[in-house]
Length: 177
Image 1: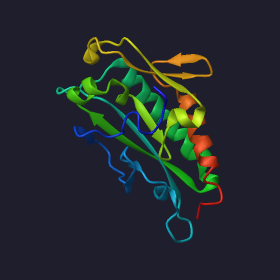
Image 2: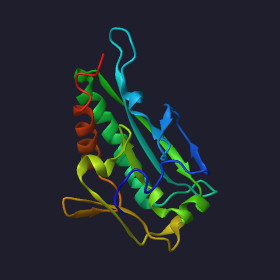
Image 3: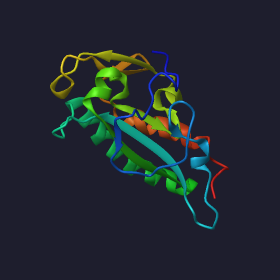
Image 4: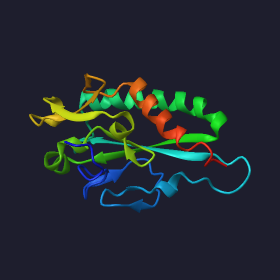
């Protein structure tokens, strides 16, 4: 997989937004437009840095351990990023999406995927996407992995998320309110 924005869309027809911070959509990937990060007018208004994460959720509400671990890392990363980005007048906003079993079987790499500032996380990091066998709700379908600087991750560590978000935010400096 090349990591192009068109390889795996962030939202398939059977995707459901859990926590919506919807922004205008663009491109074939239905990802937030860059205009979603343009500051709103008015003094003291924070510029939002959208962080979108999606994963497989079974009909009975279960997800696999690697997606669960990524979610825990994401929550922790968002707390740290809010503090780090406050002086820059930027606030990370997490949107969590669910994909159903049918969508997952059609595109397994769509699960456990993160976009930051409208781009796949791996683009910010020069990372590669792969797959490896998983378990539980994923069955025997190989699940998404991310390779960063030679290390392969099945669940995405907090430090990797923070690094990608800080790179994305650095491009927003000067665009903030």
